[in-house]
Image (tube, rainbow, N blue to C red; front, side):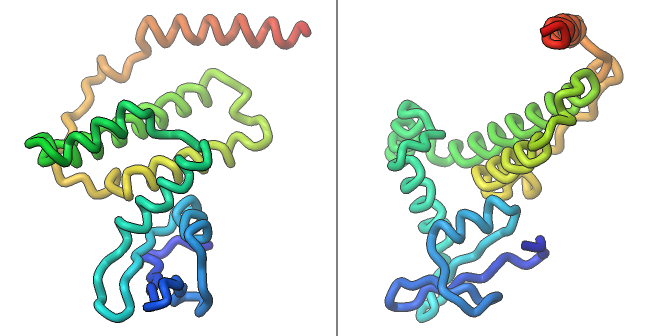
Length: 185
């Protein structure tokens, strides 16, 4: 499905059926999850009232995945989220979660870039698919907040920060040793 600037509009009818306005057909929650995994932004509105129901349905998708044993959110995180609705922390939690997922996404991107520079395994079949799925996952988990962060701008990196660290050199050395052992097998 092609990515567009406008979110995919899904209308919920009184019968609770979900209607895809682009393809003029009914969709399921799993279909909506698929659109999101493909990188589409989705907006779900109630046909009669016009209320935005997107958050409600995204939470329902997450709950269904979690209930099927596809656990992404640790129990402690879920417990803390429930507690945050009762405390003054609720004003801080959304920004904290958005920043945490952004940092996780950035760290993963840098790790993959470093792997590409030192590891020929990135050329293995399916690696690009796996990377795209991970990017879609992070985009879905952050609700697209990674591109919409309105907080303070990140500070410019020093050239010293971008120079290879001793840890990276050690990882490269270990990876080279592992590749050598694999090639001998």
